Image 1: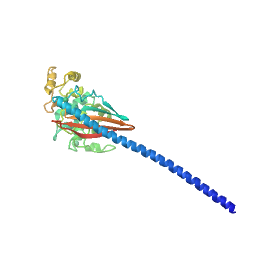
Image 2: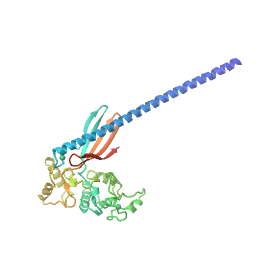
Image 3: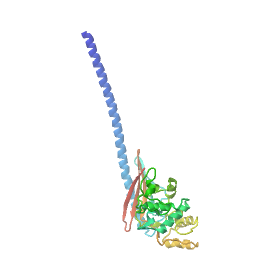
Image 4: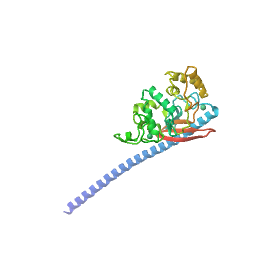
Length: 317
Ligand SMILES: [Ca+2]
Ligand SMILES: [Ca+2]
């Protein structure tokens, strides 16, 4: 009996021992997995922290280039200058990764926020947008919907294709228009009537800058945008202008006017002037370290006297 009991006790002890060993194995595996996970998390956090630091460093680099450009040539900003790299990013190797940066002019596009001038519609800008929309096979009436999106009025559509709050509130997923200037061009996707296809067609030619003094730079504007700057500018003239400025950037707006005059064309730039330089540049940065990637867009403001600063920064997916 005692023998049986001893055997039983021995059996229990053995089972307990096996259980303890099993628990210890499970615990150690779990600790190892957690350690591995935490280690990987720490490495990722470290790498992405480093990538952010490099991306911020790229801003300093871009501002130095723009400062030098200002010192070298105060009279214009064009594609023959050092800040422009043919729309290609400059790539720099890093320990276990790389960083790339691309600078572009933010003033080479039609600014949606200029469609309003105080409380009234800027008709010169409205007509430019309508011309652009027609060129891109988008209904020019939709310019009204954009004006309604940014104007403070909440109930009177600008034209039949316009849209104020009541239109948005009747949508399946309803929302309200901003009724104020756009803070980012991506808001255009929310404007009633603008499809994704239209948005991506418009994106190379339109922007949303808060600074209403940011005048269109004709040295970086697209052929399509250049053709919106006067009535009846035939298709092809924009491309001619783009080719002409390649070797000889415009040094003043009058050179552009003269180009049109020589071809019997006119520019309507009185109420919304054009410029040959820029104060706003976009830096697109991508930094890859190990498995971490940081993509950032920084808006650089360059005022007079080497006054350079970042005025907007957003992370891209
Ligand atoms: Ca310049
Ligand atoms: Ca409105």
